[in-house]
Every structure is written in C-alpha cells, then in structure tokens.
Image 1 (cartoon, rainbow, N blue to C red):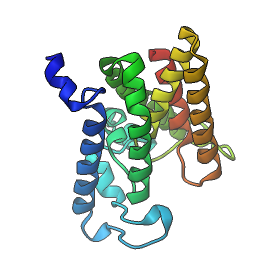
Image 2 (image 1 turned 90 degrees about the vertical axis):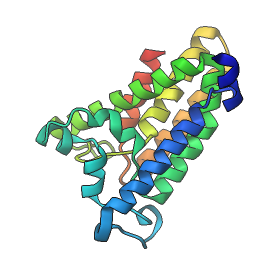
Image 3 (image 1 turned 60 degrees about the horizontal axis):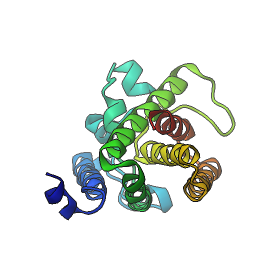
Amino acid sequence: FAPVLRRLGADFGFVPFVVGASAVLYVLSLVASGEGLQVAGRGFSILSPSAQSLIVFGASGAYPVFTFGSWWTVLSATWLHGNLLHILFNMMWVRDIGPSTADVIGPGRTVIIYVVSGVCGFVLSSVAGEFMPPLPLLRGAQLTVGASASIFGLLGALVHYGRKSGSSLIHGQAKQWALIMFLYGILMPGIDNYAHAGGFIGGYLTS
C-alpha cells in the first residue's frame, strides 16, 4: 500500500490525520458545551469548551483518572483542546515537527511515538496532580488536555535520533525547539509542564 499512501504526502497522512481529528473533536466539544461554551474572552479563553464537555470527550488529569477511574483518558486527552489558540498553536507545531519526524524516523514509528508520548505525559501529570505537592512552576493537573505532550514526544525522539545518528543539525534544532517550548510553558500560566516533561521523556525512551 506504500505507493497509495505516498499520495497523502511524505508523512503518509500523519499530519492531516492529527490536525483533522483534533479539529473535529474540538468542534464537537464546543457544540456539546451548550450554554457552558465560553465564546468571548482574551487570549486563551476564546471559544473554550466547558469542563463538563471535555470530561465527556476524554480529558485526563487527576480528577478523571483517580476520581472516576477513567484510565483510558491518558489516550484520548491528546486529541482534545481547551480553546481556539490552544489548538491553533499545537497544530502549527504538529505541522512543523510531524513531517520532519516522519522523514527521519518513519511514519509508522512516528505514530507510535506520538501516542506513547501522550500517554506518558498525561500519566505523569495525573499522578503529580494526585500525589505531588504543587511547586512554583511545576504542578500536576486536575484536568488536562492538548497535543503538546505528544509534540514534546516527537521532539524527544528527534533529540535521541540526532544524538545516536551523529546528526548535529537534527540534534541541535530539536533541542532548540524543546527549550523554546519549555520556556514558554514556564512563563505562561496554566501550562501543564508535567505533561510536557513526561511527553519528552516518553518520546526519547520510545525512540
């Protein structure tokens, strides 16, 4: 099937699938919010689904995982997003990093790393939210969504690939991207840095 799949692009359709699935679920979560939908606001509050809607669709975190026992949410949360800017920024990173990862690692491995990294990120964030005390710049989440844990996993995989292959260009670029995103997470409020760290470690180890 490779000749047919190549018509979807060098990444075998990985980026269109992630972007498309995330966009569809985001719209559905908005529709399901009903009166709880937050339409107006500033920055990261524009077009925000309600917390109840996100829980129904599979948001992760200490609350769903440990209160409801919904362990499957560590798989689903990476496909959900909390507002318009959240999904736009994450999908921009997927479009930037996804093709590069699929090109050097392979599209099949990229899918595996993307999924496993998301699981690792949300497991760490949920456990931290339930059992670890909050720190000034690092705290677990009671409710968390977003593709950034999986995106950090792709960066972790590229860092590992660059180190093992001897490609200083890939290694340096991936480290630079990861550093920029880590700093952004530290400076911006409401960012799930535990999920980012867990995703990066998961991607590196899976690679």
